Structure formats: C-alpha cells, structure tokens
Length: 153
Image (cartoon, rainbow, N blue to C red; front, side, top):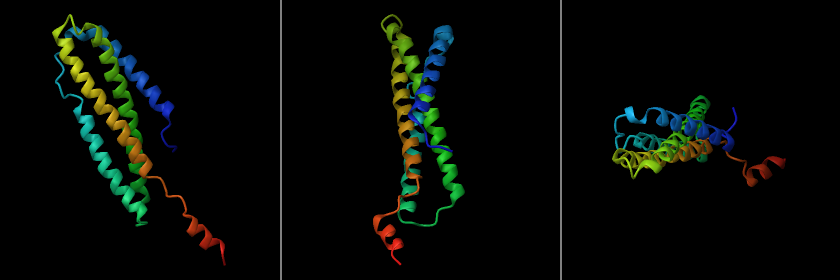
C-alpha cells in the first residue's frame, strides 16, 4: 500500500463535486432543508483521528513496541478518511456552487448554503486529520548517531 497522493484526493473531490451538483440540480426542490450542522460529524471524526495520531506518534517516537497490524489498520483508516473527506469536500463544494446563485431568490438556499460551508470546513478537517494520521504512522528515519554507531565495529 502506498501513502495517499494529492492527485487521488483531487480525483475523489471532483467526483464528489460532480455527483452532488448533479443530484442537487435534479432534485433540490424535493429535499428537506439541510440541518445547519449536518456536516459536523466529519469534524468529530477528524478530532478523533488527531487524538489517535498523537498517540501513535508518541509510541513510535519513544520506540515502544507497536503492533504492526494495528499500525496497518490505522494507515488504512487514515487513507480511507482522507479519501472520504475529499469526496465530501467536493460534494459540499458542489452543493455550495449550486446554491450560491440561488441564495437571493430562495430562502432555503441561503440557509442550506451555511450548512454547506460548515460541511466543507468539516470535510477539509477530516482530510487534514487523515493525512496527519497517515504521516504519524510512518516508520522513523534512522538517526545519524544510530547509523554511525552501526558502521563502526
């Protein structure tokens, strides 16, 4: 498995943008009003991943024994979170792009636009947390003193 590449996140975001924009274009009139904090769940997930990232990072830096399977699962979670965050960021962006020109003519569009901004912010936080968690799971580089100690002898 490779670490998340920026182009993967961009592709996921564009897919989310296209899908959500098309969905809102076809059926916005039949949707109920979006709750203001509908996207905030992604922010809660981001906070949990940041806590996990600092925990994993501390264990790896202190050179404590870390279960390889647990780290692999954590990397998979981080990768899935950043990709899901990218899809949802694109989705919220697509919703926002649909609602922005309609905000003056439709009261619901003005309210839903605020929900889309909160959702986009939360999705961006999930992307950042996923990438940070993935970074914290990397094996540390050998220190210069460790390499110099190994080469003598």
